[in-house]
Amino acid sequence: MNRWALGALLLAMLAVAVLLGVRFGSVPISTADVWAVLMGGGDAPTREIILRLRLPRALLALLVGGGLAIAGATFQALLRNPLAEPYILGISGGASVGAVLILALGWAAAGSWVLPLAAFAGALLAIALVFRVATAAGRVMDVRVLLLAGVVIAAFFSACIAFILSVSPARTVQSAVLWIMGSLAAASWRSVSLAAVYTLPATLLLMGLARPLNLMAIGEETAHHLGADVEGVKRLALVIAALITASGVAVAGVIGFVGLVVPHAVRLLVGSDHRALLPLSFLAGGAFLTLADLVARLALAPTEIPIGVITAFVGVPFFLALLRRSVSAA
Image (spheres, one colour):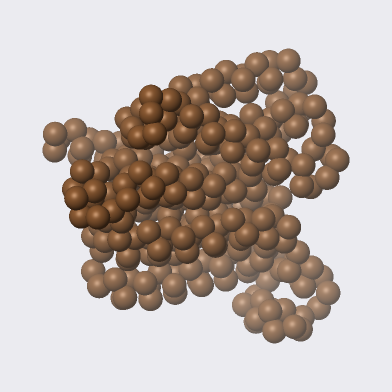
């Protein structure tokens, strides 16, 4: 499929997804009312619902979904593995430990910024530990060791979470489980700003690395012979992609499979050229998570399903099909 045609289609899908996310909810709002509020009009209750609740939530879904998708495309290029996705480095585990610890200590009520800050700090700790292990034998970062380090660090953080929850009251356990399953229910303009500050500049930086990522996807030795700074690109791209993932986890909890499903679907349509794959993955990821959040809110209304459950329902069958295809090809 032509990349420009797909880009136009994804932009239209993203716009429609945001409009649907703003329009539909527990309180019915017409499209005319939505446009009136966005143009500066509308009555006070409608403005309150759209501008303080639904619009920040839709924009946060766009940023988190786009960020997870472009991070997934980057990990898949660097690790040369279509099954790779952002959580492979244990980032979600580190973020979860930070958030669960805050909930267990009862500090979440101290301010709306405390939980995201703790989750972000935990994610950064996970990144530091994984990179430290991957470079322990020298300055060269072995992607196989990186993968193993991510699995081990994730297992350690899972044990930490299990311990914290085992000594916590039932209310804390319920809050922690809901956060671990991922949700955009606490979306606000503050969380949108936090996600945007990290995601948008990092996305532009990754797009600037499209050519060396193309070479890295072929093989590190080939990329080196063609003039790419293999170790520099590897470190920079991994840090940027990990930070994008960390910011998403900090504001929305653990949302899996977006970084697996979306880049692979886009790759099937336009190929592996990262000059097209990265920006298109961002658009597709934003549209996908915005629509997934809409389904999470409406499927069992007034009960809201954690968005991580929706993405898992889509991602697990896709992952199994992709795994079967990879095994058959081997």
